[in-house]
Length: 141
Image 1 (tube, one colour):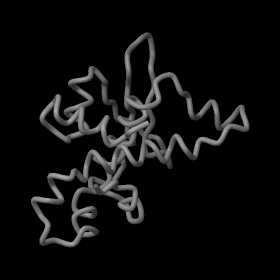
Image 2 (tube, one colour):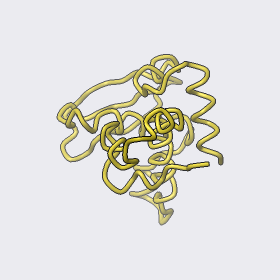
Image 3 (cartoon, helix red, strand yellow):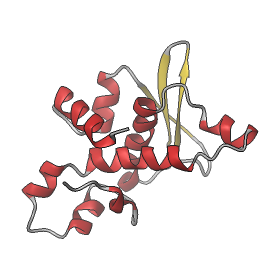
């Protein structure tokens, strides 16, 4: 699975790397709820996709969480990670890593890095809301 290529296809199609905008264009509904310690999740109900975000998520992290859940919606159609985690021995680590990679590629585009090549890579990652340590998932060609 070439995550970078899928992100490039989406950003080119919608002329944006805003996960909220892309979700809307794809017909994914975004809801907010009190989720306790959970930052967000996605689900499909009667052929309608939803991203549910924790209403108390810090503003600096909300774009990343939305991009991560959008990654699940785009990359993992039909995969129910909560079910897999609770009822099987299947490891969801790969699925979560792919969603994180999708979010990093979406928020930390090659164009953004080239445009700001005078700024430290890690500083740019922080500015776009990528959590510490996940910026290393960026594929640099």
